Image 1: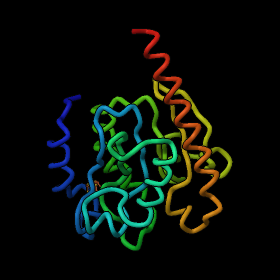
Image 2: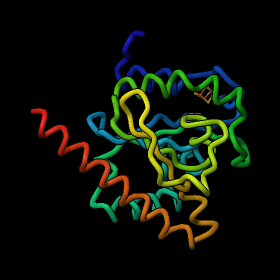
Image 3: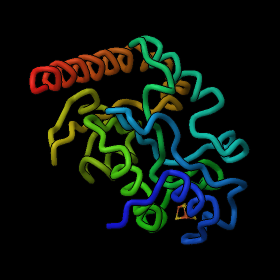
Length: 193
Ligand code: SF4
């Protein structure tokens, strides 16, 4: 598989017309963050604000996400965040399976660029796409699965926390678990150097 640069990938995404979401989007939203980060967050698709700004996780969901990151001493510059589909589904509906399928190559290229150690799925749609089709986010969030040299986990999508603020503390706990997994990985790396 040819390895594109981030800039080349972004150019493809910005002009992509591979699925019908290209007809209703305002701006395609390429993932963002540090390409050296060991941690990749994946949500389902851009919301209204992201569609306007062309940046993932802005607006109120972005604020919740930033609070969760701050709670474990991290910032956006320390992680990489992207979506399954790069264009906003009208009315904030779930992206259709065919749209997810059409957009998957971009996520695969982003994963190849990043080579993450931990992938965190934000919400049910991302978890069912990345971890397992019958994934139950309410029951399984915060648990880890090791596949192809990468730890996979999930937590609630920040927009779910906005709808039900009681999910915030559970998600904080999940973020702490993610942080500890990251520490374990760093210690293991140090020991092999
Ligand atoms: S959602 Fe993905 S596949 Fe569909 S038009 Fe946007 S970038 Fe292309």
